[in-house]
Amino acid sequence: MSVTQGQGRPFRGALVGCGFFARNHLNAWRQIPGVEIVALCDTNADRLRGAAEITPGARLYASAAAMLRAETLDFVDVATTVASHRPLVEQIANAGLHCICQKPFANSIEDARAMVEACASAGVRLMVHENFRWQAPIRAVRDVIAGGEIGRPFWGRVSFRSAFDVFTGQPYLATDERFIVQDLGIHIIDIARCLFGEVADLSATTQRINPRIRGEDVATLLLRHEAGTTSVVDCSYSTALPEELFPQTLVEVDGTDGTLRLGADYRLTVHRRGGETRELRCDPPMHGWSQRPWHNIQDSVVNIQHHWIECLRSGAEPETSGRDNLKTLELVDAAYSAARSCATLRLCA
Ligand code: NAD
Ligand code: 89V
Image (cartoon, rainbow, N blue to C red; front, side, top):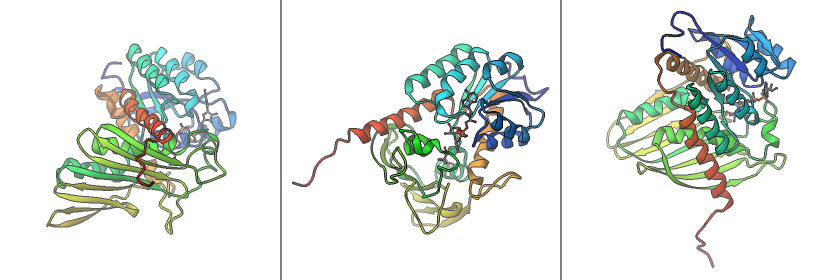
């Protein structure tokens, strides 16, 4: 695609997978200038009809192949669950179209590499819809670190602890073999990469506390970053707190010149060693379609999709390109391996 395409007319997109989360993609597309969703696809007719209510006028398809044959598109946004990602992304790349793919990008690193390769060979852009790093409070934390106010970060914690019922809206989360690291930890690991850089090594433990689900619902990771920072990534869906914070990610960073704390309710405290302390409110904006408590995630969907359109216009590589996301996915796999084969030093007799 030439970089000027889409400037004279809106970019034409289609969405495949009109389920639980897709309505956020569709609502976000509606408010981003320069893009039009012209076609929707789902194998489930009810879901397709539901999505059509958000995007009236879009043409409807039960098959991605039929849609790709019939439509003239610039990009396709894949919001299906992980099992269908590789065949869909490969079809889209073979059709010469740019592609967004929801997280988790793939069930295996081999599948993920094949998708990156398919898009590279076809000369199309690929972005993984890894939206948590696009949340307003996470961007604020990243900006404070980048501004140098707290010096070099030497320790961090990125934490997501909740007892929110995610299983009613997303029943597959209760039945998949892998749960919290693959579904939610993947975001929290990606935030740790975004804030502290690439990871040299990690150790991990996982637990299943909720007996009604198949996979693990608690995970604790210790990461050593290449730049020297040590970080803790901890996630739980079995943590009943007096105040339910879903879906807030809390962040602590200790730097050589100060500290920052992203606490409950999007309050960010930045303290300079021996000096001032300032408080920032990082409340994510509400959009006309936002619903608490999801509004933080919903706003991040607007931000990442806006970024995608800017990248299509400028020709820049998306921040969470397929290639970039391989690194997050490798850490997910490494966490499961480390948790399985935990090499521990026994200190008691
Ligand atoms: P879902 O099961 O509710 O919806 C998926 C839809 O895709 C279904 O309607 C299904 O019929 C359709 N589908 C599956 N294969 C298809 C195919 N080959 N062709 C056409 N349609 C097909 O799932 P969901 O909860 O909406 O999750 C979708 C993805 O979004 C998952 O990968 C999930 O991890 C991710 N997700 C991300 C966030 C986030 O904040 N980033 C939040 C929730 C879910
Ligand atoms: O963001 C997600 O991927 C969701 C949830 C926040 C519920 O874990 O599945």
